[in-house]
Image (cartoon, rainbow, N blue to C red; front, side, top):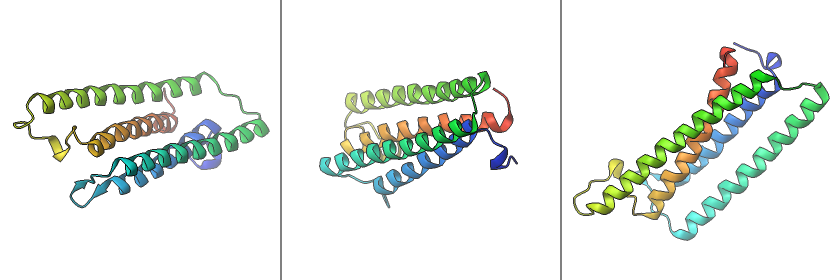
Length: 161
């Protein structure tokens, strides 16, 4: 196992960002999921949750960026080709998660609208319900970002691109 002091600054930043993203995602899940599945929140509650998620993410990512910018400046670390390739690999994997999930969501939305009485939603998610659609779309964005950061962490841990 790699010790924190032996990690490069981009690897440390990847770890911290992954942990913070998972923390914000867990707050989102806690608010959205009840005992019987996705809660049917009002439009006002969804807007409040959406704004909270955006503001919390911006603030936390700004803090991470400023802390690591000052650390990199003081240490003199310069990113190399390996760092760039690892970042690209993470971004590519996150992009594929978004593309795949959006296509599934569009297909399921069309299925539910084509056969409204006959179609049985998967996992009880109705794409005609604003809370459910919000949950699926925001969950997709969180999942993509987590895959992006986890890919980077894994690439640094395995020391390959």
